[in-house]
Length: 74
Image (cartoon, rainbow, N blue to C red; front, top):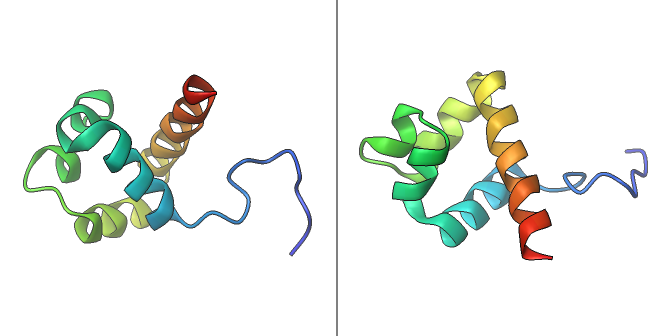
């Protein structure tokens, strides 16, 4: 694995990112910010991970929101 010091997502697992987003925003606000069914209807980490791993555009939006959360909390 190559070293990427300027990439805040490097070395982070998708489940860790999702858990931190849920802890920060909660499922309801997360579903408002990223309108996908796995966040709005009976949300769970497991079902969301399954969807996000199969859907690149949704994963990009989750990662983008995570980066925004990091910027806002600094």
